[in-house]
Image 1 (cartoon, rainbow, N blue to C red):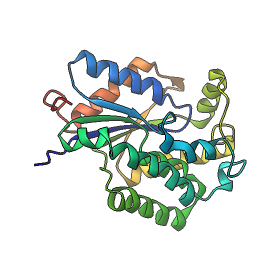
Image 2 (image 1 turned 90 degrees about the horizontal axis):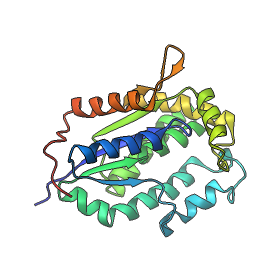
Image 3 (image 1 turned 135 degrees about the horizontal axis):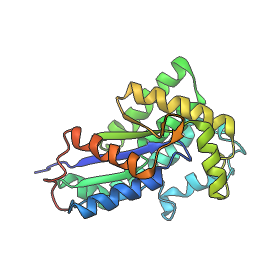
Image 4 (image 1 turned 90 degrees about the vertical axis):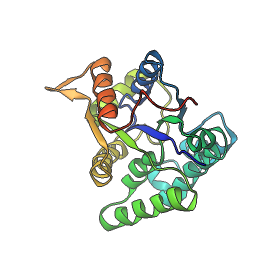
Length: 228
């Protein structure tokens, strides 16, 4: 008999500090003796992400806007479907806890940003049907959205010094993603955590403490999660 697990997602635009918060949450869960499986998406080291890598490298067009949000979404969804066909799906079906850095929610934010109004609504409904119904991927139990002003995100991306992909190098697109993230957060009742306070960037530890409290208050019992 399937027990069904719990699924926690950390989401946000590029440069919002997702990786930092993901690592801090992983470390705290480990310290507290919580058993879980974690995964970052896309899985860049896996063959199932090849189309994602080609897309971000500009091989289908030299800007994010050059590629249909529907086409790009399928690239990312295929990678997630492949992941859940293996160990992730096994852990979830047996009652385990999954911690994910990005998920279907990332398509809602970054591909939804290419659309407006009714077209965005149609897209978001289509995407949720594709991933959660057609592909059978589990819906998140809680989505933590890191709300970072796009200007600060751009500043942090520049400081990072990484080679920017077609999403990160387009300041206009990043602004639209930030707006879309807030829109999707309201539509799907995500837990929005502000990365700023009083005009200043909060410390990673302060943000992490709020994230943990939000998860505990969501009804996910971190003390009684089945060992993965």
